[in-house]
Image (cartoon, rainbow, N blue to C red; front, side, top):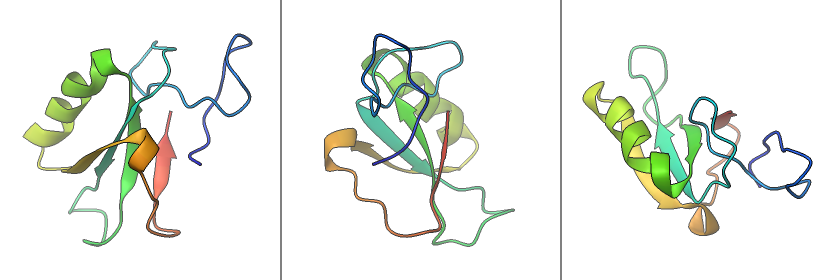
Length: 86
């Protein structure tokens, strides 16, 4: 499971959205990398609620960083090269 901070009203393992200031439950994983900094197989992740998925995907997409958007329930980390940002 992707670790993330939680608020008192959320369960101890409830992933939350990576959008600044958002405390909503995450339902999407946005996998990305910066080709100037990361090897092609490395994936960093941001989590997104329904409301912020498109905004975060657009932010990463215009920079050429977005590699995949997957429902959180279907996400399978591919190894140790992945990092999550809250």
